[in-house]
Image (cartoon, rainbow, N blue to C red; front, side, top):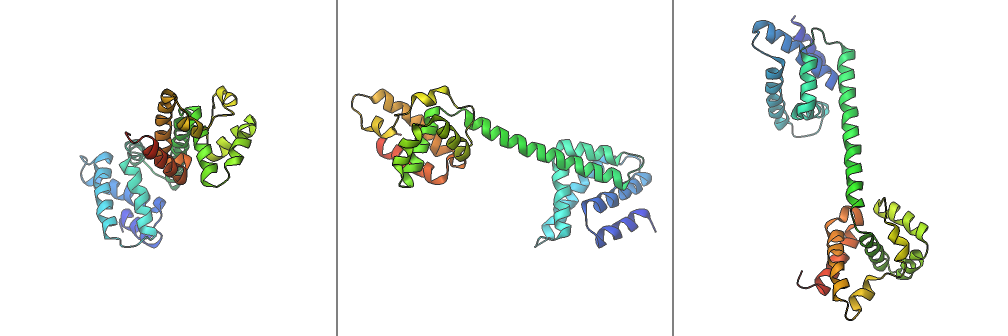
Length: 233
């Protein structure tokens, strides 16, 4: 029996990414021996189309569909596809080499997710300090504990801790300690302060645009205030 046929049986009995890659590598070697013009890159490009067609037939989640999804993700990413091409071009591909390849892919993906989280934090760092203060005021306001906001504002360290835990804020401006008496309500109600009031608009818009940071309820309340106090917006 051809080696790739035996590997296909192993994969059918135990559909893991490791067995799938071993099966397809053996099939690639068989195809290349029949036609030297078939490269690993060409084979894997065709394999991606095959996987997409196969996944379309699955109506439920199962071990095979999950395995095929793993390989599809690898082949859809230019970087990991290139690593798989290098693997397939090897003269011999052991089970250990396949496991090492998959472990490296998993590690790279984890690092990417961590980088995405860091990017999200850096995005939050670009917010004006008053944006966080307004969001905090709204947070306590909608929780019917507005007095706690004014109390918290008097303790800069406690306030920083709250912002980090609640909104994942980092690298907060030193101006935080100088804004202990700040209240968006006072600004909106004040007379002859159109300039300061106008400065609140972009901060409310930031809160509205980032419910993933400030929370859906806080963003919704910010939108209500923007509509009522800045009708031209």
